[in-house]
Image 1 (cartoon, rainbow, N blue to C red):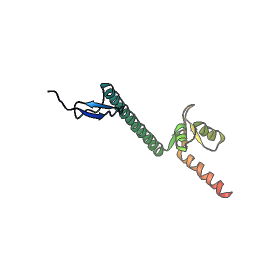
Image 2: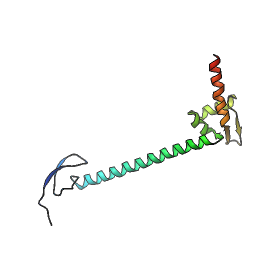
Image 3: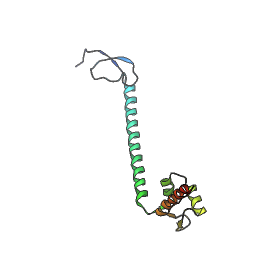
Image 4: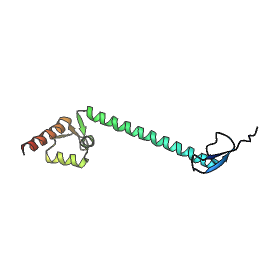
Length: 126
């Protein structure tokens, strides 16, 4: 059955006016329909990726907060500084660490907390 209904619509993708033969037509052409579909898939994929990224960020912060000994990378993440800054603090003696091997350096969470206690005491004395 063919329909004799013809309505003027505006394409939801490109914004052009077109004559629709049905009342549910949303796009002016098959090309606009495909482009809108692909754009919707792309936005869904980006949103899913952002949610996963946020989940892993929160999970890594929870792991850092719960562990007693941290790696250099975790310590840098906790202090919001670079790994080189942590290595400089270790080499200068301001931050005590343990070398389990050449590449396994662990820093006690208590030592990081003590680093801030010493800094606040020096500020109060001045």
